[in-house]
Length: 67
Image (cartoon, rainbow, N blue to C red):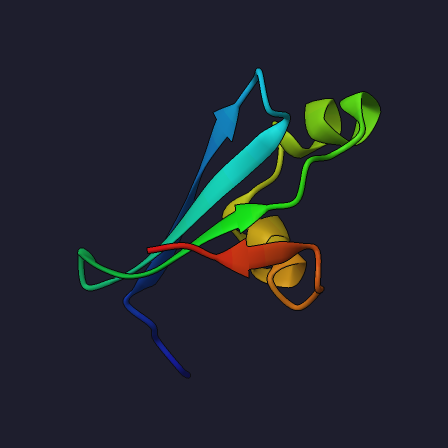
């Protein structure tokens, strides 16, 4: 059984209709991404995403890396 210490947290930006996605390993920030602006319906749907949903999202090309 594989265990991972990686966690993902997504924070919405309501005015821009984007999310900032932060990846942590053992509590330390390792990566930070931002979604491209999303259509209103998709943005609202993503507000209910789970950590696994965001992991799947990061397999797409609908985001970019931020510092």
